[in-house]
Length: 37
Image (cartoon, helix red, strand yellow):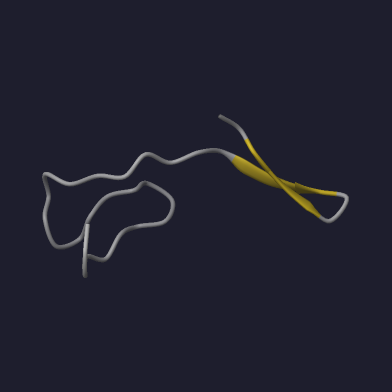
């Protein structure tokens, strides 16, 4: 994970194809960031 670059929408790692981060749906509601977990 250190010094890697990731696509913020998909979690795909651009440097190492086998590495991927979990992503979550988000939205802004009344000035608050809501994260669906």
